[in-house]
Image 1 (cartoon, helix red, strand yellow):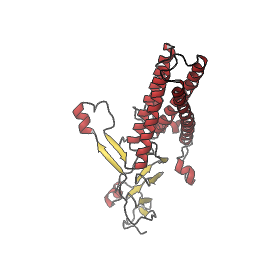
Image 2: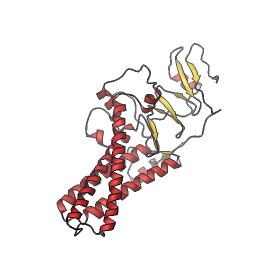
Image 3: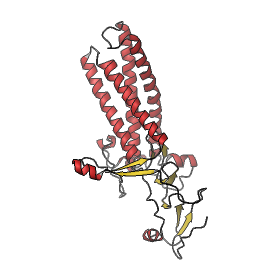
Image 4: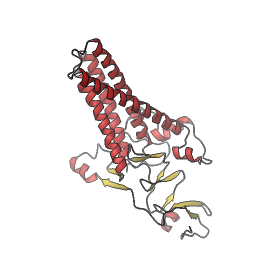
Length: 313
């Protein structure tokens, strides 16, 4: 495909091949919450005033399903196991731990879902913008024909969001968003906290079942023994399944971050000749600099070691 943009003694603009003949419809809707936050006085608390919403019905269903699974675990842990447990101190401590990790998991999920993963401005492949980029003569840049934007190095076009995403790792239906440069930290936290509450609920379910059997189901639950057994079996299955799944996902993401190679680059084997950073610098490039408790908080946007700005949208 020939590119109509020509720059004598300037950069070379090449249009990537695509089976689409022209630009595609945007798969994302951005919602401005600024007026509402200012009216309610919450603008100083909420750092993200724009919501990045992907218009994908499959992703929306997966997100709702994720919230329902967490709510089911909350119900079984709090009302089936801990509420009627005779050991008050043990119940209180485990309830606080579980609630904390569940809150952090849901917060990380929402931050991943509603944050701009690092999108390239759509339609910026104009003559004026390319001239402002200050490119060298003969330097080759690529234009994405789907979103009509200049494609930065290590960016990939997402067929769901219909946008080019910087350092795109993959599109995850469970968060209904791409995992990219700006929200990879929150995705790692989401998988980590889901893994923690999964194995914590698994431990409490097994412990509760053994305790109930030992006491012949007396004073161990407000439900009948068959109902309690069904609740526990489903929670054990859920905890085991999603505990293993999220542990693998979290480990995979941390490995990719440390190796400074995204999932797409690993699959395509096209990490190129980029200079590899140390493990520690690679971690700080995602979680921020310097190391602190903010690494583990979904409410803290990372401060990068370079001067790249972080966009919440």
